[in-house]
Amino acid sequence: MNISIQEPYRFLGRLNNQRGLSLLEVLMALVVVFLALLGFAGFSVVAHTGMTASEKMTRAVTLAQEKLEDVRRDGIPTSLTSTWVNTEPYGSITGAMHHQRILTIQPHTPMPGLHKVTVEVLWDHDAHTTSFKTYLTN
Picture 1: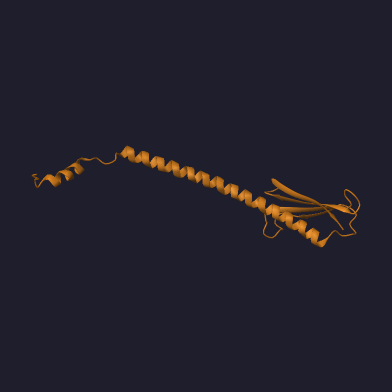
Picture 2: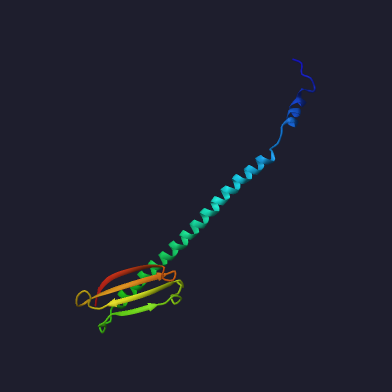
């Protein structure tokens, strides 16, 4: 088997004959990458919006539960004879500046000795609301 000295260099000659990517191919690859990144950016905006709404809802439920626990712990005043409403306006609740909480106690409803307690929490300027109701005795 005779191998000439130029045999190994034939491979290098073939490398020099290969063409690179055309400008059109590079631009198409960039467009595909850009569209993929744009899709991820849109998804992140939707995810952030959902997380913010979920956080506000969770905070509202927690605020309502806390107020009900306060009423259970402190009890209903025996002197209460008519409906009592206590409103904590927006900005007055520590750690929940975007929420408003309304406590309503209706004494002797639906029967004597039983009191209907309602806690309503509103947020985003009354765009959303949640409420808890329970009945307590003296």
